[in-house]
Image 1 (tube, rainbow, N blue to C red):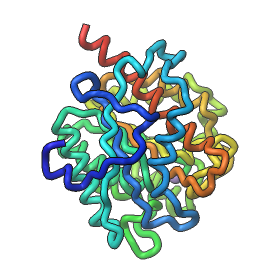
Image 2: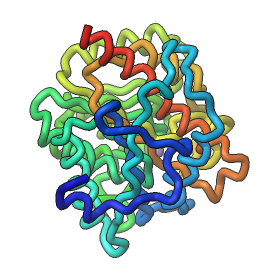
Image 3: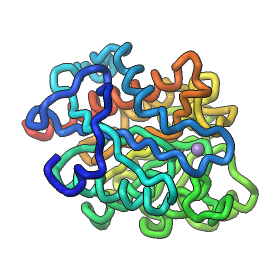
Length: 307
Ligand SMILES: [Mn+2]
């Protein structure tokens, strides 16, 4: 890092999986964002970047699904964003500054949350850099469409409302939705935001989910992928701030990812892991797996584009 943005980053004592590559060999930059201010239930997200880094050390880097070995190109682990603790608005601004720096340096950032609110800063940066046609795919149990929650517009329960402010309905697609208040559900329907419930993924199958997502992606120029770990059933991902039963299985998620990934994808965030509630570390393992499969798949598409 060689800009003002580096003032906001501190090296982590552990890098993702125990290894970090070279900037000229890989486009991927991993950045911890230990944002932990607005949880309304269980806290502890600030420990997640470290916990996901350690979990990655115990996973294979070869992806059978993509037939790609992440070891061949790796990523740069940039460290953690240093966040002000007194204001979520200030924290989002810092995240936005660092994300802008990574995008303008032609990096493909992978943000390890932290609470979902960080996505407001990172997607704002993506939209500023890539402009019209920037779309955000959000995998999440919740619609996060409250206008305000616990006295702030910038709560984890309001993330999609804030995205709607600058992306508009055509810039957002929600997947895995299953937990909304009645008023959020009405807002979801009246806003015109496209969404796919976890129930329809189960009932109509992966093929249906994929074709619906590909239709949507066809209207976009760039894709930002946001994965709230509570999109998974708590059986697979118990260590999240607000677990919600009846969720997606990892295989469903990875199959959908396999089918929709393309060189249009510009960033990933993996948020809401809460290590104090993840004693067996399976949630951090799954989060690390999401990161590895994303890099494997995107590498394949970028390599095909260069040929
Ligand atoms: Mn959620």
